[in-house]
Length: 170
Ligand SMILES: Cc1cc2nc3c(=O)[nH]c(=O)nc-3n(C[C@H](O)[C@H](O)[C@H](O)COP(=O)(O)O)c2cc1C
Image (cartoon, rainbow, N blue to C red; front, side, top):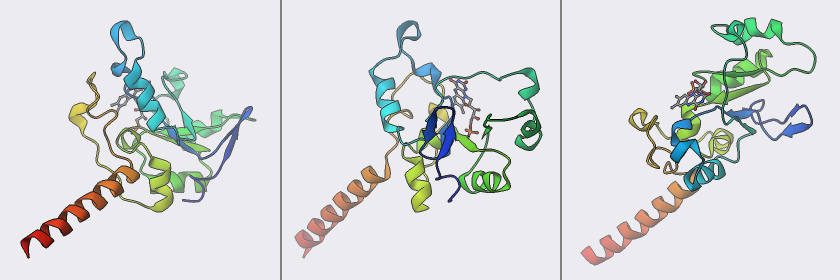
């Protein structure tokens, strides 16, 4: 996944990787759509993305139903193309290798994997997203998917408990 994890210059910025977070979960804002503490926590947990797009709308009607290869022809000069929609890390890597986009935005996979770039770097297993929690206003399915670190800590904890249990059994 060399390309996906390589930096990309975008205007005045240098993105540390090309794993972009798609705009998601707008429904989670609070009263009268004002962001709240839970939204801060969500973006904090996803901060390893090369770029986070918090909201978006199709750039033009021509943008609809065009694959990245066809969209490509409309992009000139310093413009960068970020592809999105149904990508898995391996497909995204091939797309970048073909030069059909400069970065890839992940949506559902990023919701469920707050540390997605790290998981891609380590070729680690991805958490499975829970569709039933997508358009709710709750923290469940928003800030409670575990990072690898949290999963490793939980595994260590259960290994310790297992050992204690075996020792008591003897
Ligand atoms: C649960 C969910 C919530 C979304 N919320 C928003 C949103 O608030 N604003 C927006 O512009 N797009 C939103 N989208 C559209 C995604 O940004 C877009 O479909 C993206 O390409 C999905 O990537 P994926 O196929 O990797 O999941 C949402 C998509 C999903 C699945």
